[in-house]
Amino acid sequence: MDSLTQFFAYFSPFGGTFTKSSTKSKKEEQFKQQNFRRGEGGQNGAVPPGRGGEMAVDKAKLVAKRATMLSSKCQTFYADDPLLVARASMQFVFDENGRRFLDCISNVQHVGHCHPRVVEAVHSQLSLSTCNIRFLSPILTDLAESLLQTFPSQLDTVLFCNSGSEANDLALQLARDWTGAKDVIVLENAYHGHLTTAMQMSPYKFDRGSNIKQPKWVHVGPAPDLYRGKYRHADEDFGDKSELSRKYVEDIRRILERAKAKGRRVAAFIAEALQSCGGQVLPPRGYFRQVAETGFGRVGDTFWAHQLDGEDGEFVPDIVTMGKSMGNGYPIAAVVTCKEIADKHCGAVSYFNTYGGNPASCAAALSVLRVIREENLLGHCQNMGELFRKELNGLKERHKSVGDVRGAGMFWGVDLVKSRCTREPNSELAHKLILKLKREDGVLLSIDGPYGNILKFKPPLCFGVTDLREAINALDKALGELSNDDV
Image (cartoon, rainbow, N blue to C red; front, side):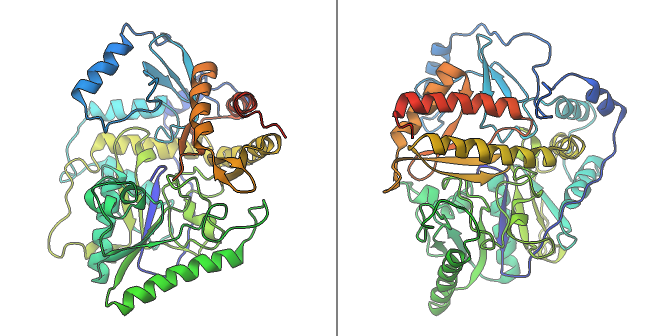
C-alpha cells in the first residue's frame, strides 16, 4: 500500500476521467515568482534560502534513546546507519550536519517536502479553526468537490478518515454492507494496511511469520507479475500480453467458483493497480478493473492508476480508497464511492471519525490537488516517466545484474538478479547498493519485493531531469563497482 489508492469492487461496469479546475490566489501567484526550482526539467525544486540544516544533536544517543523508548518493531530506513533528517525541502533532505541527500523514495511528500504552498495552507487553517466534521467547514466541502472532479460522475460521495489502513477497513465495511457477503479476494504479496482487518487481507504480512493468519474469508489469487509470476513472458518487452492476462483472470474466476461451491460469497476484490510491496509489479493492460495505491498523478498518463487499464469511460470502480500522499505528509485519507453504497453503510448508524476530514488536513490535501493542477505535475510526471524508462533500461543494457525494469510515471522498480537465465533474486546486492548510494553519493533509494531485491524509485513529483541523471549516474557507478557485471 505504498503509493496512494486501492480499489474495492463487487464486480460491476468500469471507467475513469480527469477534470481540471483551479482558482489562483494572490499568494499562489506570488509563489510562482519565487525561485524554488532549478529549472531543468521544469519541476526541480531548488533549496530555498535559509539555514543549512545543521543540528546540535548526538545521533548515537538519539538512536539509543529511540531503542529504549520505542518498540523494536518501529524500524527505520538504513537500519545499520539511520538517517537523521534535520530539515527537508522539495526533493532534498538534510542531515544534522547539513549534508544534502537526493530523495528518490518519499512518495508521501507527494509534491515535495515542505512545499511552500502546502505549508502556508496548513498554517493559515490552523490559525482559523481545527473543529471536527460535525461542524460546518467550507474547507471540507471544497476538498470533496475538488477531489470528486478527478473521478467519473458515478463516484459522487466522499468519506474522510486518517490513513490508508482506515480507508481500506471502511471500504471493506461498505462492500459488506452493500453486498451482504463477507469474503474478499486479494493478490499474493499485497499489502493493504496495519489494522487487523487490513493485515488479514495482506499476504505481505500473513505470509511472513506474522501472528495475523489468513482467515477463511480471504482468498488469495496470483499477482499478475509478468517477470516473476505464475505466468511469465519469454521476451523482455512489456507489450500487450493479452494471453497471459487472460490466464491470470481465469485464476480469479476459479477462486470465485471454488468459494461459491463451498457456500461462500465474495463481497469485494481489493488490489493495487501497480503493486508496490509486491515488487513494483505492473500488470498486463486490461487485467485490472480496479483502482490501486498510486494515484494523484504519480503514473503520469492519468490521474488515477486504474485509468491505465482501459479507455476513458471503460472502467469505473465501485469504491476507491486513498491515503499517504494525499496530504503531502499531513495525515488524511478518503474513500470515494457512489451515494447508494455510502448511504447503506451501518444501517441507521452515522459515520463519524474524530480527525477524519479535520480542517488542517483538508487544507493540506486541497493544496496538493491545486499544486498538481497549476504546476502541471501530471504532464511533468508523464514526461519524466519516459525518461525513467529510457535511463533505467540503459542500466539494464549495461549491467547483467539488472534483470528487469518496470513501472510508469514516477513509480519504478529495478529487479536485481544473480542470473538473467534463472532470474534468481539478488537481495544482497540490493542492500549493498542502497547503503553505498546513501553514504557515498547522497542518493536515497529503498528496496522491497518478496525477495528484497527490487530497487524502488518513487520520488516527490517535483523530482526532475537533473535529479534523475544524478541518481542514475550514481547507481550506474555503484553497480559497476559492486557487481562487476558490465555487459
